[in-house]
Image (cartoon, rainbow, N blue to C red; front, side, top):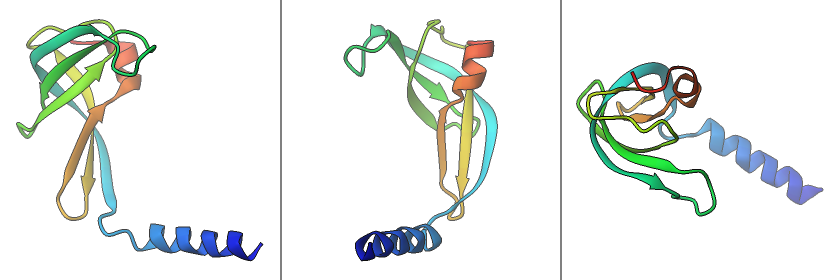
Length: 104
């Protein structure tokens, strides 16, 4: 019981003292620059995916694995942009919008 309590206190302290907390999460779109490959299985037995390079709104290039349909160069891809306190940004596929809208 004491070990569990100590672990809980440690986890709470780490979450409270995070060095770079996320301050915002916004939906954005990126433009497909390159379709590097399609028909890949990056996780072994999973579904087929495409590997693309996307240009985010601030011109950062992001490499993504995308489920079907396969986009073409120039398609718009729905992304999520996470903004962090120190100015860092992280982009990833907005899977909900991708399933509804697909490439545009």
